[in-house]
Image (cartoon, rainbow over all chains, first blue to last red; front, side, top):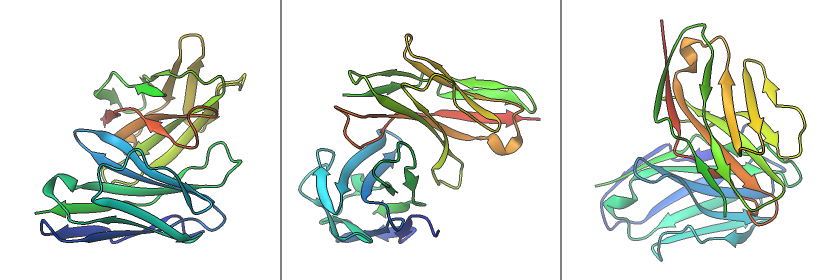
Length: 114
Length: 116
């Protein structure tokens, strides 16, 4: 089991550029979550999917953020245009419905917008 | 809505001693789950232990145990025989099974440092 795989591990981009973060959940897991971690706000849920369908996107900061899950094995989080305040660690997590625990996190993407 | 409160921003413990990290929660759900995660300086989130609200026994996983007091809405993590490798940030989280949906809500974390 390879775990939740996120790419890239680190991203440095200039303000105004488009940024795409990628996530491959654990095979068989049908819920996928995107979290953002900052010193000021801690860990906050941005959006989550069940069976590839977005269920709750109330945490997405604004229209500059969008997330997709075209199939069960891949999701993207896109920021366009990026701003310095988007600098954070972005985590993807997945779990299998019916398992009360078992939220597995990826290693995160550290995004720096300069 | 769920709310997790961790009131200890930082804790120190001597190696081989036990330490308790505090967590209180608030929810309107009758059924919920409580989690603890460890985040070392390398940044990954490592699942430690889980407690269901209807579990009668306190959860244990090796040196980790969860002191669950439902009436007080507390879910403290106890680490026994601390090791240097336990130095990390620790997060308490919960999931409500009805109103909370499928998501985890996290506390602000406690930074634990284990000293020789």
